[in-house]
Image (tube, rainbow, N blue to C red; front, side, top):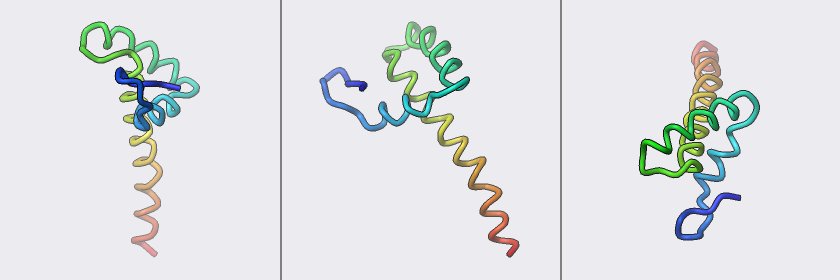
Length: 73
């Protein structure tokens, strides 16, 4: 479980890291290390941000055709 710098669990960090599974997880973790070195964010924060972006994009890709189908009906 991820803890923030003040020792508290952040739900955004937990959800973001949980979204990194399979090939997305391998890519996210590989990208997070170099990005964290160049930014003030920790590796866990970068991984969580990447995971959240991928989760939002997957939700968008799922919801868009469903909304289009409902509008046509």
